[in-house]
Length: 130
Image (tube, rainbow, N blue to C red; front, top):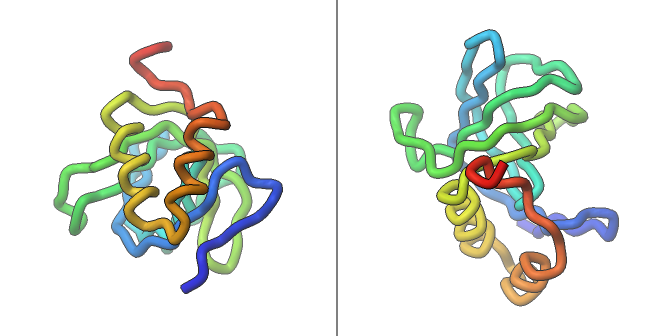
């Protein structure tokens, strides 16, 4: 599977096949699949509709739906595609940021480029620094 690259993007997207969970501000939550992941956000596929511009909490799970989250981030729902819904990360704690960086490095086809992106671009705000 080719890695998604686009010159307009700040961060490389890497294809993943991981479980995810979205929690809406009203307390509704549902599980789905993460299609791709970057330091800037994720593409989330689920049977539930999310409204563009909606604030959510998104979790990247270690295994099945009963697993503890590896990454827990505040997110903003963006566009919807045939493959899923784009969610931009708007904040996360240090542990989640470290786990996200490790996941992106583990799944990338070009680790040199990803490390350069880590150095060159600002990261999502860390909740513990807000």
